[in-house]
Image (cartoon, rainbow, N blue to C red):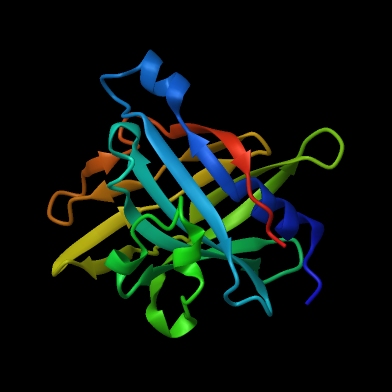
Length: 200
């Protein structure tokens, strides 16, 4: 399938190794210093660009967490894009795959659980030349919830991406109170790209 220039740009902007060093140094009370990997994987290649995402505290790089799959594809019309999230059925088998992508070679679509409410609509703003700023927001009335380690989890998702930066608005929400319990509580995690990964 021929992907639009916008979809290819979104995939290239999201693919890479990131950290939020400047933010963690400037606001250590609110932001942990994190490393984020977003690795292209060869799944759903007929109509999508797919990434495996994982993050780790820089002080505990050997204990990464929050494995997820992001499937980027055209939206309902030619100018819109969307991101569908999936959860690996066996996340323990993929621990460390952000830094060791060989662990992803045997991953198949059958080993993923679709998260129906975990979908973002992506809009783009054209910057100078052929550069974009992408903004991904949840669909109205959608609720990203799933079961993880026998617990019900509710997550508010969202991000902004440019060629050099990735801002994550992801937050964990307490189902009982509706209040954020972890993540971008005081504003987005502001990551800078340190390494570019090829999406082809």
